[in-house]
Image (cartoon, rainbow, N blue to C red; front, top):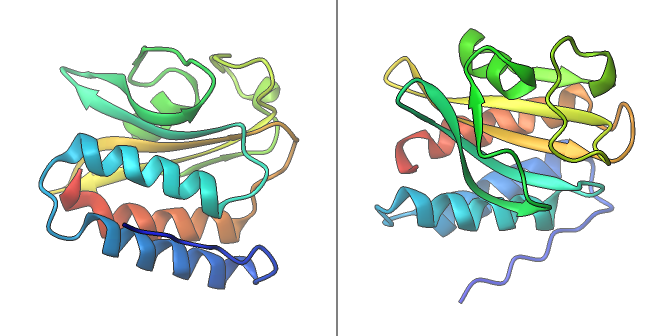
Amino acid sequence: MFDFAPDETLPAEERYRQLVDAADALTAGEGDGVANMANLAALMWEFIPDLNWAGFYRVVDGELVLGPFVGRPACIRIPIGQGVCGAAASSGETQLVEDVHAFPGHIACDAASQSELVVPVVRDDTVVAVIDLDAPTKARFARADAEGIEELARRIAGRI
């Protein structure tokens, strides 16, 4: 049994280091990508304060398909290139969006979402999934959040 207890008083960089280490321990030796994504979504929910959604969209047959997550029900399929998740998948670049309502083509799966961080997961030079974090406040995510989730994506790319 794993019992990870994040310390919310730590600086973001240290909290993300602990998150990545916990993710590494939790997924080490497990070959089932869906099981790993499910545990990682729960882990992000525990480690990252002020979220209303945390999870994955997987690239399947040229579109994003909902993967394991924590939060309210979400859009099941998102075309590559559409919305914040689709932009991250098509460009292969992190999307740090302070105000989702100002993002051209934003797809509103949860009306409570005000800001979003989406990080592509790249394996063998190909985007295989995106990590999607939503928050109910504008400008919730900073560069430290993006860097922490980018490191997480690198670490778990071969495990999902």
